[in-house]
Amino acid sequence: MLWTERTRHVKIALVVAAVLIAAMSLVASFYLIRDLKAEEHRKMEIWAKAMQTLQEANEKTDLSMVFSVIESNHTIPVIVIDPSGNVMDCRNVDVGRNSSQEDSIAKIKEIARNMQSSGNTLRMNLTQQGVEGLSPEYITVCYGESLMLGRLSSYPFVQLGVVGLFMAVAIFALLSLKRAEQNRVWVGLSRETAHQLGTPISSLMAWNQILQEQYPDDTLLPEMETDVKRLQLIAERFSKIGSKPELKLCDLLIIVQATVDYMRRRAPEHVRVNFTPPEEEVPEVRLSAPLFQWVLENLCKNAMDAMPDGRGEINISIVRKERKIRILVQDTGKGINKKNFKNVFKPGFTTKQRGWGLGLSLAKRIVEEYHKGAIYVKDSQIGKGTTFAIDLNIEQ
Image (tube, rainbow, N blue to C red; front, side):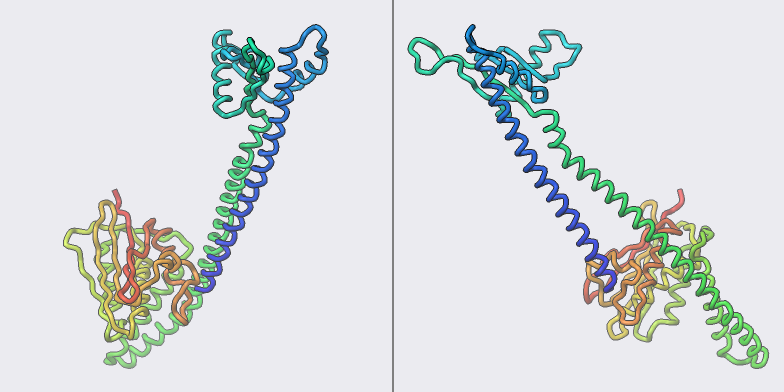
């Protein structure tokens, strides 16, 4: 449980760090874009002054500097219109090469209106205000963002998208490597356990056979033989981990009933294990019977360990949900916090003082990877109990 909490804290810290980096990048880009907009606005003021000078020029006006300023604008789109809205001049405005003159003028006017609605306009008077008998004449200079400013404005979002994609790929790769490493550990540990159990089990089987020959009337020897066979079944289950199990069509009711009968014999005195067969017919399901029975046993054992004072009930039921079969294992134990519904299936998570936290993780692996089903905590209340659910697909 401590390991799981630390892992969760590390993930939260990484997410927070990524958010802070993204926020700093956006803030820096915002100030850079703001300064660049202000610089372009100043350039357009100078350009508008040059246009004003050009409109008011006479034969004595030196226009060399004016033309130099006007021709220096190669990036900022600009449109000059008169008080009637007619286009007097435009620069760096893309209207399409195949457009006719009328279409081009209409499009330029539309672009100018968009620029005006954005507030990117400068009004330059061409006659002195207050002169009696003269109406003030003016030109309106409409301008937009330069290509560089437009690219810079979208760059932070592109950058965040690339960084986000890179992080997603990196996290996916790390999780895949971690999962592959866990699989290798599971397989190695399981097969080594099966190998280590093989020799003493064979020896016990031989000794049990000798004892049965010498004491044929002993009533305890059949029970011993049953337990030895049980050990042999456990070793067989461990040996199947890591290799693709052979799935066969099985009667789920028989498997569940066999598990219930076994757990009743092994349950504490004040723990009852109940099984309610469904009223409707349950179709056969493709399973690896030894492995699936192991999952049910694991859920029942965990439920027994969660019983306060060793007293309670375990209720197993089967229901059909469209194209799925759902097995419910409900107990009256101490319950699970909602925040730990997913953590209980992670390796190393346990609430027991002497637990390894591997049983439910292995159960999840068997159900989801081998049987293509799902196992999850359906419901749990502290002090009242927990319900685990297993969903299996019915063949079409």
